[in-house]
Image (tube, rainbow, N blue to C red; front, side, top):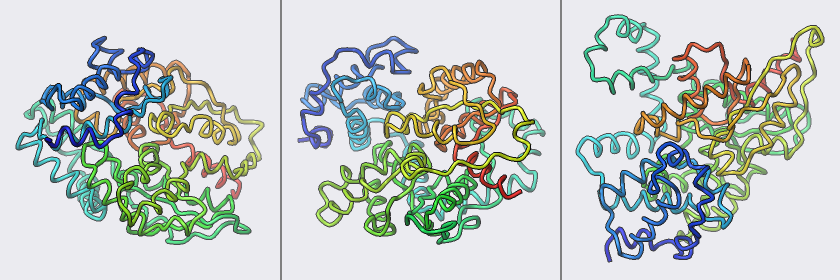
Length: 439
């Protein structure tokens, strides 16, 4: 039996058979909506997976390209009346692609080895790279390069990638957050906060804000300075073995029995973190701890609503200041993967002088989808433009979102379009409201 068959047959075959081919997922799928091609739909992709599991098709380059054309946004799971676990199918299908080397090319192999298998297996390496990029930006070398005109000599795709270079913050999470933060007032809970890898590299201030908000609500917060990647990048890109190794590291660093909750503030990470039990089901040493972990992991919005977050007091001049309009874009993996939908809106509704306005197609993917905007730039750009058009229609001054990849994608779009919009995490807005009480 080949690796491709064994990989897909590691699943309970009923998972593959569960799709009824009813087509109710089709209107929810961004790639099918854009192309109207059956194989670009969840139903079409599952049919291909089943044919491979049955030995009727091989894992070919065409199959591999189709699996990586899928956003993995999981909107089909919200639409599916049969409860098909597309997330599990998707991860195993991509793992089969990697095991069979269906997309193998020297450059692709090198990039994956450098990033997924080396850089993101040790967050300290990622932060070293981040410090180098920060220095490059602080010294003005990036600005100088962009003004020099030399970038025009590069191929278009490289110019696009350079334009997407994120701004590295002046400090990372370990510089902003103590290993243990005491609660404000009596201790109600003891929680751990996962600072993440991309989240730490690009949005360390959100980690700081998360810790402050939890402390304001009676939580003792444990935030070790040297943490590990959650493994979502690896699982979503066919490296389930590496994802399992990172899960074990997190279980060792954050024994779930020691905490009332394990907090994630990134939708994509949280969706993966809640499934360590499935990932380590065959590991006798970690299986039970992983199941307990799954029960303890909470998205930060979910946890704050669960414990009854305190509404900030309105500032003294609130009655003389017009309310700021804020709209909320749902992270795919927060809404479809974790089913955390109302809680971020509830957090935003606590904040004085914010008026929450509905965003059309709030749960439609923005095109970030992990690294999709890097690997599928054309489709990602179409989705981003669609999202920005809806944001404009709300008249909002702030766009709120609870996932690092979405925040990065939206900030890129806002900057390139020259829109007067702030893109912020709901917890950062809540933290600012708490700080305003003290002024």
